Structures are given as C-alpha cells and as structure tokens.
Image (tube, rainbow, N blue to C red; front, top):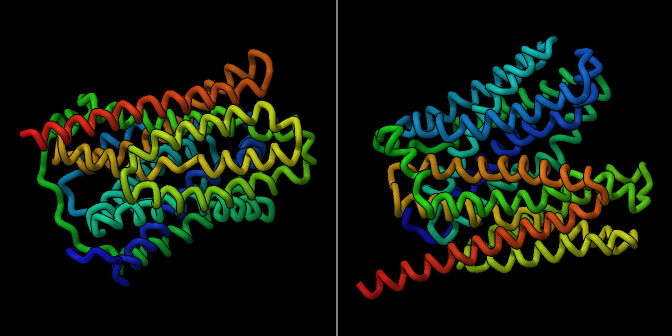
Length: 399
C-alpha cells in the first residue's frame, strides 16, 4: 500500500487486531482475578493455583518462537483464523474443566495459541500499514492488552463472584467468537513468507544485535515489575485504605492507556534514540518512590508516573526487532515479531523474582532501587544499540 495516510480499511484492520489482542489479553490475565476461586473450588493451595500463571508464561515464552519458525510459510489469514477457532474451543473447554490437571493442560495450549496470534497480529500490522504509520498501528494493537487489564479482567472477576470461576471463561469464549467474525471479514489475504528451515530462522537468535534488542524490553519490563509485583504491600505501607486499593489499581491501568498512546508517538521518529532517555526517566521515577511513599498524595502521583512510563518501550522495540531481522535475516521477520512478547514475559518473570529476593532480604522499599538500577541497565543497552546503528549508517554513507 503506497499511501502515507491511514484509510478506512487500514483503521478497520487496526481495530480488528486491537480487538484480538484485547481478547487474548483478557484470557491471559483473567486467571489472576479468579485465582482464589479456582484454588478453593479445586481444593488446591493458592501456590499451586499460581502455577497456572507461571506455566502459561513459561509455555508462551518457549513455544511461541518455535511455532512461529515452524509455521512461517503458512498463509497468514487462514492460519490466524484456525488459531482463533482453536482459542474459542480451548476457552469453552475451560468452562467445563473440573480438575487442576485438565485446566493446566488447557491453559498451556492456550498460551501457545496466544503467543502465536499476538506475533502474527504484530506482523500483519507492520506489513500492511504505511511505513510512517506502523508505530501508531502497533501501539493500538498493544493497546488491546492495556484495555484487557482495565476492562476485561475486572468484568471476568465480577462474573466469577456472581456465578463461579468457570463462568469467567464463558466471557473469553464469547469474546473469541466476536474476534473470529471480525477477523473473518477484515483480515486481508497476505502472501506467506518463503519457506525457510528452522536453522535459518533460529540463526536470527545468534546475532548479537538481535540479542541486544531482545534484552532492551526484557530489562524495561523487569524494571517495572520489580516494583509493580509488590505494589499492594507498598500501598498498604502508605496506609492506603483497603477499600481503595482496587480503585488505585484501576487508576494505574487507566493511566497506562496514555502510556500506550505515547509509545506510538515515540516510535514515530528516532525511536531507539528517544528510548535511551525514556529509560533514564523511568529510573528516576522508580527510585523516587523510595521517598515519595512517605506522603500518600505524593506517593500516588509517583505511582501514576510509574504507570505512565511502564509501556513506553513496547512499540519502539517491537518495530526495532522486525527491522533488524529485515537487515540480518529477512526470512525470519515472523520469528522477530514473536520476540517482543517473549521478552516482556521474560522481563516480568525476572523483575518479579528479583524484587521478591530483595523484598525478603528486608526493607520492602528497596525494590524501588532495584527497579531503577534495572532501568539504567536498559538505558545503557539502548545507548549502545543506538551508537552501533549510527556507526552502521555512517559506514553505508562512506561506501
């Protein structure tokens, strides 16, 4: 498409892909809101029920690149429709699930479908939009996850309170059916990528520049989740009324919508150059929590700023990975598109674990320092990547 502006057809596709990520995000995150319901219903501990979350994240991280590599040659439209259909079936089976093992298996299968669908949504958004508008399109697609946290998960939790946890999966099944209909009528027929071997695909992961780009979002998410994982204990330490904590968390999610909009603007021009300083600001915001939490109002403002900084990196790093793959391994752009969602899951696991170690060592607020230091590491890695990009451009000019 040669136009530099977004047509009605472009917008329809963007909204369809955003709906899809909203549905996938609701399905992924809903388990957190109904965890205690599942544990009491299935007569298991909360810790065992928590493995449904970690197993999902681990399966997502390991399986997504493998499946993306193995299926890179398949026609994208047909493959996406098949996967959305599979998603509907898996969520419908969760409605009927009555044992931990069955639910665990279904969640792991859903994780594979979710990871591949998210990656394909990113590829479609990147390949069908005018170059100048790719950042805007991908920020909208990522926005589906933000809306899932703000709208989808609370609705699912309320349904579980009214009926039971199985009924929450009726919501995701129904949403999946809507996403299937939208995708059926809107997804364009796209050329499949030339078949390439798994070895060709995975050679992408051996390139130092790709690995550097992968760890930028890993560290960025790690910085946030070192603190966010323990936000409720921090709020209790600020003497926030128990009745207001859910409202504060809703506010946190609502502010992240604006973070997503800003992410698209950052990605529109000199994205990696701008991200160098975004991470430095993020570090200041996280570290300053160490002091601002002494005052309830200042603490809440600081937490709002933390939410605003949380996902500014998403769109820029997603496009950066796809663009680098275009330079170093053009046959592996589908695999490259899967790396950002994988990196975010790696970062979330790493950040929450690191925060947990620090928390259990003593002072809870030390997690803010750890988050800030991880953000500084992300900034340093981004500075290095940006410098290498500039050197490469100069070498091309000289040649």
